[in-house]
Image (cartoon, rainbow over the protein chains, first blue to last red):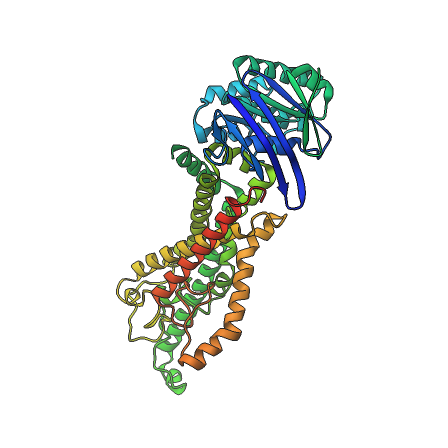
Length: 212
Length: 299
């Protein structure tokens, strides 16, 4: 998978969110976006996910323009601004409902993803009873279960302890080695230096490559 | 298309397997039980009157009465056919809440907790909206119809069934009412037709929740939105439109969305008007909802 972000600018009402951003992203690599809160990292991920469209410029995925030739990337795993699940169902039921839409992940794939993220698929507790760390792990499992070609992860290690962080890092490396394209947004420079092949600084909607 | 089918199945499952849907059914059950009590009291009154009339015909004659109590049968006593029963009056006001309660709030919840992003990127914005709209429509329609259909069946355990006679004056349905001919020939079919129209009305009403989009923070406001709109419309129609209609036309027809499908309307509610109003409400909720859900990337 090759993604080209070509001179993208995004205005929301009177606010300039992304300012003439150009990037090239390729499969089998981890890209890090580093910046303070409100710098535009999450908006850049939302742009890559097709959830917002550029005011000017274009995002193309394998030659197809996002928002014109396709609404969303065809194989996408998304963890944005914290995990998103229904509070009244168990973790397993939540993932089954999501996986049921595309039906690319089997029941065993879902259970396996939950185990890999460090949770018990047979846990009968409702999602609302989960701790913050468990919610984050379930979010990671939802990204992994369908083995997507593009993973967009916003602060994936939030609320995790050291062991949990290490576990997630190993999963990110495994997905990269599988050939997935991973974009990781974090304010944590240490995390990005450990995981990302290329790191970009995001500040006031502008993006600059950080030298290693 | 397959992804849409699976999404629709999931949304329907969520719409019919949540606490709010069960609460809507429970509120409907309260209406049913409330009305059964009222019908039972009417039966007792009828029996006492009949006993008295049979035991003391001279006293009956001295009051100038005919010698038989006022007629009493299922289709003039049952909820929703009796316009003076308290459950009927309450239901006329509150059914829009029952319609919105099961799943009208779900779009706001999906947007607030990010589930919209997860579903939309798998099935597309239009697919998400279509599945959500149908789920809200169907759950709202079912919750609205349940007290009507089950209420008449429950009352049938108490009140005797006879085919309504057009020559009696005990029935509120007359020429110009929705399916009035069916009422006096096949009343159960009339009930089925009324329930069908109420299902569509309840569904369209529930989908009005989409019009608010994400402008409000609390789901309770979304649930109360349709009843608030209908209450304002009902008041405006009663105070402004009905007098004008009476003056210009010489008669009044029922146009308030709260009462137009109720079989016990005071004013005529012809079928064409019932379906025109359902069509308008569906169009408004569909177009407004599409604008909110598909058209707003950051709604």
